[in-house]
Length: 182
Image (cartoon, rainbow, N blue to C red; front, top):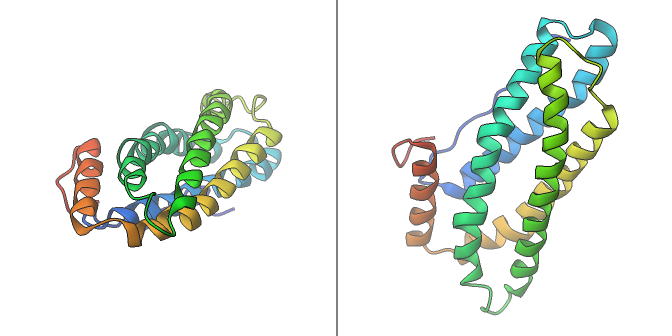
């Protein structure tokens, strides 16, 4: 195993849906890291590479993951809800409601997995439970597929340029970066 860590390209906040999609790519990479950890731990134990990978996953989901859910729930979903009465977009509301329920389930799954990863960063791999990882990864895989198909795709057609700017500005502000930056 060459590396447990991954990186991904960044989009600018002037394209907020692209930023959200790029975040999904990073989430998927973090999930792959979690999956690779199982085999790595079996072969190498909680070595430095495993501890660094656990720390990177913790950092990602503790910061970027929280921002991502806030971007959606505080900014994107309210903008989209305003459009769901338009013909052809009624299904978006049902999608949003499911995604919000998913967020609660993912937060619970993350809280449990987070404990194991914190122990791993201290060199203790005994709390790492593959079933916990598989559940977390499966939740995100289903969630991302639904979100992109039922919300992001129609959202590109639903949102006005002004709303996209508003969304991007809120996302940038949440991260403390200038608008137009990633």
